[in-house]
Amino acid sequence: MITIIYKRDKCIGCNSCVLVCPLFFSMSKIDGKSVLLKSKLKKRIYILKNIDNVFTRYLSKATKICPVKIIKIIRH
Amino acid sequence: MKKIELLSPINNYESLYAAIESGANSIYFGVEQLNMRAVNSNLKIKDIKKISNICKKNKIKKYLTLNTIIYDHDILLVKRILKKCKKYDIDGIIAMDNFVMNYSNKLNLPIHISTQLNITNIESLKFYSKYSDVIVLSRELNLNQIKNICSLIKKNNIKGFSKKKIKIEIFCHGSLCMAVSGKCYLSLHTYNSSANRGACKQNCRREYLVKDYKSNLSYKISNEYIMSSKDLCTINFLDKIIDTGINILKIEGRGKSPEYVSVITKCYKEAIESIENKSYTQDKINDWIYKLSSVYNRGFWSGYYLGQRIGEWTQNSGSLSLKKKIYIGKVIKFYNKIKVMIVLIESYNLEIFDNLYIIGNKIGVKETKVKKIINKKKEEVSEVKKGEICSIKVQFKAYTNNKIYKIINN
Image (tube, rainbow over all chains, first blue to last red; front, side, top):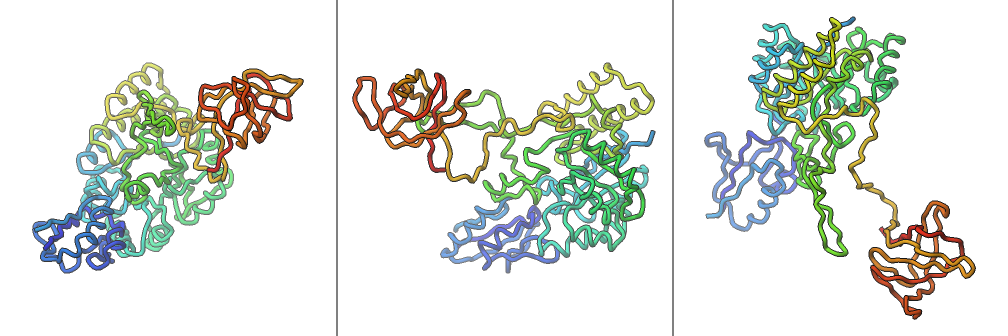
């Protein structure tokens, strides 16, 4: 299982993660930043737990493409 | 003599106060991610109120920069920021996007046309004057061009959106970008990190190696940052700048520290005052330059204002032509009667059926195809390598020291 950690504060709204991982990210029209879908907010960090390992490669595209490097994957 | 407005950059409250104390007439700042320093900006929408109040108390003007590329998902945020600006009496919006201009006009917020729009002539200035009150001219103009634009504004009485005479703003100090008016793709191309969304990774500021692929040798260009331009500094000819008729002098540096803002603002404020009361002397200039050098800088130059040639450090033509030429050697002797040239190959190699350019002073440019190569031992060969001498028959007259280039596909 993997967990995604997303530091949304630093998002510059470039839309890249949404382009490569539309299953997990979408753009907010309210503040122009990306949203990690179904995630929970904990101490200003968005966390999405218990994702199947098959998404590892798919999600690593987002971690790589993010210009401000605020998306991280943790493998359990 | 009209009053010159000195506009300082701020990125946090420390630099805001530094600017106020150093005598800035106005400040500019960006909030959230929609400004050209998105990565190192800590100011949020809620700060607009506080900054506005501090500026009002200190009787200085405040402008908000909103000059990134705007996407559909940014529209609501832009509207929210602009409404806040209206509510808290921000004196102007520095904009490049047409939607930002249009919406600001709707709210009756004055617009400063960002330098990113690259205004370089009076006609495009006229076009944008319908929507704006201040035009930040392109950083690539020289003083004569700026003077001409300012005098044409006066002559034609060009008025801005709020029916007042349009004002001209130019950069007087700070970092310069290697790209024309900041329109750079390097950072996006290499890191997917767009400079035009405020996330420039500054590729141009680094030291680069030059590599010869043939020999696999790398050369370090000693201490030279081939794409990084020095910082703009105009304090030593500020009188000429003011003489062009501009209204606002802007300092670059929202990514810089508060002491930077303080020192630069102070020096330029003093310089403007000295010019106003006619005490602008060389001693003072030396003193200011010494002070300016004490804070972050990459060395100073006068930008493009004095008409220097541009882009001498870049060798990347970015040409889309299908052919290119590579230097392979030179003519060391030419036998006119039999039209044979003796060639020294200095790099790469020469092969039979190669197409060549012979280029030189008297010859101009001649093109030829190699049909026969004779080496030093008078044998016919199909290839000669670097360092070897050979003879080639041509149909025209060549001269000693003419250069020989191989034409290859790009």
